[in-house]
Image 1 (cartoon, rainbow, N blue to C red):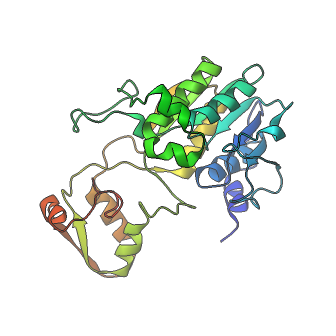
Image 2: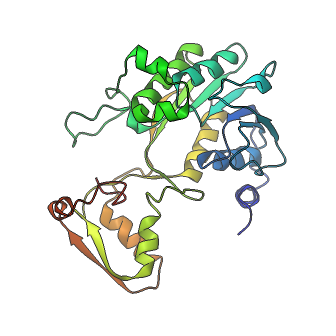
Length: 293
């Protein structure tokens, strides 16, 4: 396989150039989603600068400018005095981080693209009801929100903290923020096993346990599609709040598993078991049994 930055950039035709190239600062950009966005942005002719700690994917995209810093430590010194048209934040978990970065460029940047999550929603109500962008958000006290100075401290209240991050960006740059709320992100560079467990397991063949209701609905979005759409939002100055959960229309667990089966020549059969069976055997949803809730 070609290196990611070469293979994805090569997938974009050279003629597909943006009409108005932007100076884009990516906060992060070397982990999972970021590289897919960066590859498309470069292919479209945008000038990209990456700001990261230099610990993950530091060798990616040698053709662009890399700036070193650490948001956990409050070290944004490498960004002092710089100007960018668009700030893309793929690494904001603590509200203080987002407030600091958005405020730094509030006078000069045209747009702040914040990668949030659908985990911001309060799902304590009817679990069968669809949630749109106007759904009720999780909350957290001012005291607890301020306490979180690092990513590690923010993660225990992940959804509520991301909601605070969205608000911090909007407060610093009112009307110039695109808050994007992805669901399950899958695709190349995904190390979570939250989706890839299934194609790997089905490729092993044999009798395969399939969880719960075969018609249960699932949602996922490919990192490459999400990265492309983020570039679209920049080029078209799309502002506001958007759920980003993949396919337009329902996808069932059965369709996902049979789709995986179609990708292998290994013989295998699916045995569907009830949710009661899984609970009885103490199988944890989502993490122990991927995609099943």
